[in-house]
Image (cartoon, rainbow, N blue to C red; front, side, top):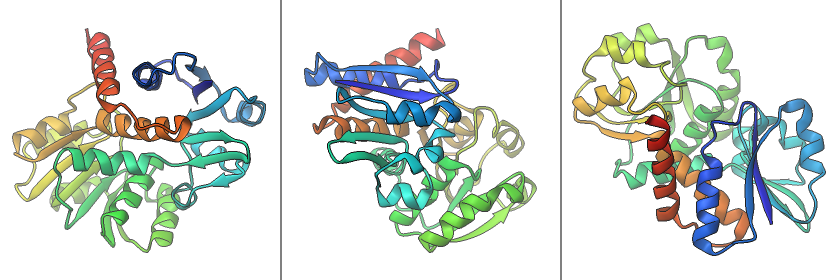
Length: 274
């Protein structure tokens, strides 16, 4: 059986390392997983032309949103968040799933992060939408979302409305004057939160945990500041690992061998850092 991760650019993706490690641990010697450079224009032809030897696909942005019209079924989480990062080929058609939400929840649980009484999310893109859905699953009904441009938060606000979560938008200047409490989730790209972390120096003592979705380079300045403040720090590799584990389960029908996947991913990140 075959599987792949699609995106543009895609050469940096850690998904092939994680999925191949899973296949090896599961004894699926006839399974393969590749990285395919694919943009929105080529997505339709690629997704619809896969044969019976294909198990599924992993998708990066912006393909997560673009794939929805190509599916015969989308799970409720994918519909609410407006994106599917996983396509599974079945006899009845193409099924789409969002495993990012599970990845976030599993990463927080693994690190021992308590159920937050308050959450602040940095960013308003697809990962922020998944983070908001994860917070909703944990019982929160309100969230602070920090953005550089409020006009770009329309998609997240639509997701919040479907989830029944009240969102208060603010900018980074307000964040510095009113530091967050509870859980801080950064969905920003690498280095995008560096300025905030540098200016904040030490994060406030009532901040219990920081989850930064970046996994390379690691640690980020935000993660370093959180660690120095005594907060629980969760990195993006944990989310990547757990969402990939959920994909493996969907595509193979077998429990994900997380220990083998974790070891392979950490070894690859160490190799790249060297």
